[in-house]
Image 1 (cartoon, rainbow, N blue to C red):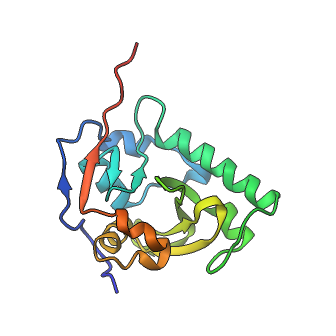
Image 2 (image 1 turned 135 degrees about the vertical axis):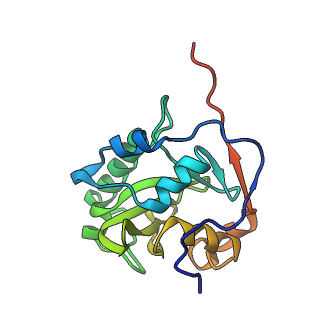
Length: 183
């Protein structure tokens, strides 16, 4: 079982991070109902930034441009809400319609799994449990108590119970993205 993590396991960073978030920018983020960003996420956004985690996951950060936390959170929240309203969800093993509507999305896998915090379930000081919403809203699974442990579960392969065969894609890497230059 993963630890309760207070730091990220070693990752090979394929190049110097290009787009990171400062503490001031992270402090200014306003998500639903005054939700404050968890410490593990803040650490990730400041040190790794925007890019591809473990060859599979994109963790959105607040930044200039299109693929940022605020815009993606709004889009994914709408997807979840419409999924609940249109009865598209398979909530098993850990979800309910109420939980789905409460979740605050912050990342996605390249396979379409959504990563989201449950603002009603603290896992420690300044942390919230992370849930994984399966591809095409196929499940809701409690994934980790924080982002440190989530990354650890990717590297020790315990994430297999959440994403199945997609674990074949996982590598102990972080590949920073670089936004195209503005026109």
